[in-house]
Image 1 (tube, rainbow, N blue to C red):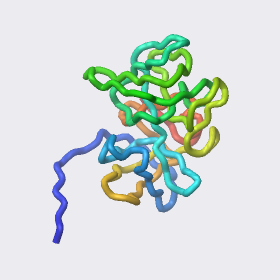
Image 2 (tube, helix red, strand yellow):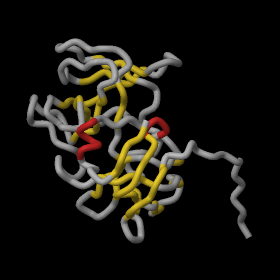
Image 3 (spheres, rainbow, N blue to C red):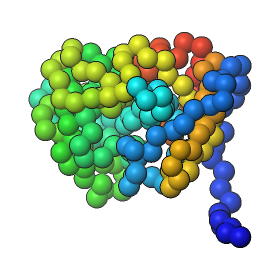
Image 4 (cartoon, rainbow, N blue to C red):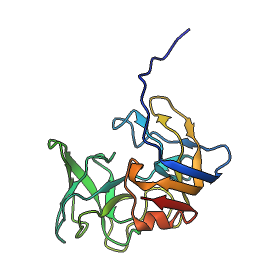
Length: 199
């Protein structure tokens, strides 16, 4: 009999209160995450795609301000973006989007995302969000779903080394925003009106 050996590790608690979840949870897609992480922590924002799988809404928090004509964006380490992903500033998708052509991870304190073209100014603390592709200001769209698609928060860790793994999905309750693994902004929170974000 095959036994899988795991080291003991516990993620910081994210889910404070569960009022309602999606019955049966949902299958988490690993397509966009392979090569980046082997395990998805709990407390990640996901959206359902056209095949019924739940895709991670990739985000990254700006660590330094970027000018209006910038093509290099300095972000905090905690993200799962990779080259070829497109990004925009903000979960409202109101600004331009462009494709990541290179990622510099050489500094231990931050990463630098180099884009094929500018997506406009970004302030410290702004959130870069996964987009479908390059687009002019006001024309950016999400890679999965649309700007009004319902979002959910994963309730348990997901092993990405195995296909078709599921997770409980919170749609109404309370979460600890500080312990969420990836950043969210007010626009992303606005698509989860029944979830309360505590600091």
